[in-house]
Each structure stands twice: as C-alpha cells, then as structure tokens.
Image 1 (cartoon, rainbow, N blue to C red):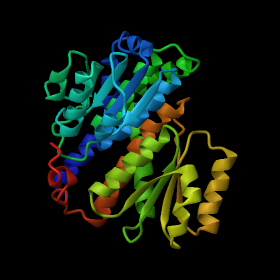
Image 2 (cartoon, one colour; image 1 turned 45 degrees about the vertical axis):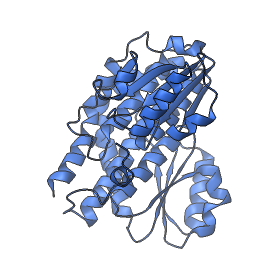
Image 3 (tube, one colour; image 1 turned 90 degrees about the vertical axis):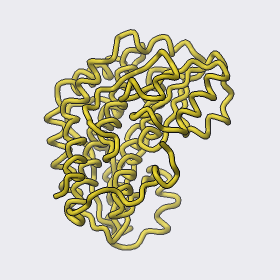
Length: 332
C-alpha cells in the first residue's frame, strides 16, 4: 500500500477519537441565540455542502427555520440582519464559501464559520468561529474526519435547543461521545463487506432520504474522488420515479436507512434485488442511537471505509488523486 492510502485510512480511523473531542468543544451557549433569527442559512461546497444539508435537518428538528445552499446560491436568498449564515469549510480556504460569507456580511447577516482551522481565511471573516477537532494533519487527503466532526458539532448545537427531540438528541450526543472505537470498528467491518460486494465495472447507487441522505452524498463523493468507480446518490422516492429507467442488470445499490429497519425498507430492497436485479446491501447500524441524525454519522463512516477498501482492492498502488476538480476549477 502507498503512503497516500495509509494517510487516507488514518483520516478515517481517527474518528474514533475526533468526534468525541469535537463534541467536548461545543459550548452549551453555542446555539440558542440563532433560534431567534428568522432564517438560518448553512452554506458549503463539496463535502461541506453535504454537512450543510445535515445541519439543515439538525436545526429543523429543533424548530429552527433552516436552509442549506451551495455557495453560489446565496445570491438567490434575501439577506438581512434577521439572517444567520453558517459558512462551513473544514480547511477554511474554500474560495466560493468565502465569497458567500462576504456577500452575506455585506447584506448585514450574522456570520458563523464552522471550520477545523481556526486560523484559516474563513475564520478571519467573523468573531464567531465554531471549531471542530478533526485530528488530521492535512486537508489534501480524502477529508473523512473533518466531515463527520462538523456533522457532530451541528448535532450538539441542535441538542442544546429546546424541542420535542431534545432528550433523544442529547442521549445520542452522549452515546457518540463514548462509542467512538465501537462505531469505527463497526464501520470498518461494514465498509469491507460493501467493498467485497461491489465491482468497478458498474456504477454504485446510494439511496436514502432525510438526514441519512447526507451519508449517501458523502459516499458518492468518496467513491468518485478516487476515480475507481462511479458513485451516484439518489433520493429514495426519486429513484422510484427516474433512476430505475437507466438500471442495467447486475448494477449495485446500497439502501441507507434508519434503525430499526421498517417493513417498507424490506419491500424496497425486494424491488431492487428481485425486480431490478441489482446487487444490494442494506446499510443501517445498531449502535444504540435513537435519531436518524445521529445514525447518519456512523453510516457516513461506513461509506468512507467502503470507498477506501475498494481502492485498496483494485488500485493498491494509488499515489494520489487523479486531476481533482479542486485543482481543475481552482477552488482553493
């Protein structure tokens, strides 16, 4: 194996500690003031866009009027002093997210930056910096821990807001704080199982909805960034309407769901395997987490592991990414 792949794996395995470290770093008073605002807009690009979508679900669960957008979409939202914009960038260097933050500031919105680098360029745009503790040495490998620690940060913010889900969210925050080793071990086993099932000769669909759609989005990005096989994220209902028209026999799919699985999950899997003749895997965890929000975090880690071990199976000599979009589009 290469130093590059070993570094990518280390950025996944560090999550057994980094998620707990991040949760400890969230102050109790971090979230309540944003609930009084008319709109909370979470913005990010790439993995951070998926985190923004997760944050939308987290804040909606607490009754906050929240939206998630890609950085260029900020131009389509009315912004004023009654808005909070949460700019998410692990490295603090995403140019489009920086532009979105500056646009929001110019319109009088309150700005929060959620980042793993409190000394990065994004953090200099505001005094209100939410800092994760990803525990990584470089942001130039597959960004595993910075992604899930940002999700964990937003989960804890939501758990501090009064809502009918607050007790369950607080339970899950406490569980995630204690179960890092168990969670990563489960995710690695699940990821290896998935990688042994799939082949780069066919695309891999990752289907989900709600908070777990974040896991599908990040799984898609992890498979695609290694350029071994094509990953496709699909919303559960939209797959029923559209994606099946392009399915070839033997193509591959992961259904990501909440736990415990429902009868509708089993019916859905039956259609995928028996009717559409797809190779299927049902991803859900039994880690004692009560909410779909929290369950999405280990499901995300499992897909990070699956993408990584797929590379180790089919291209163990990989020294780095193919020309990445980050370089091609000069996004940093």
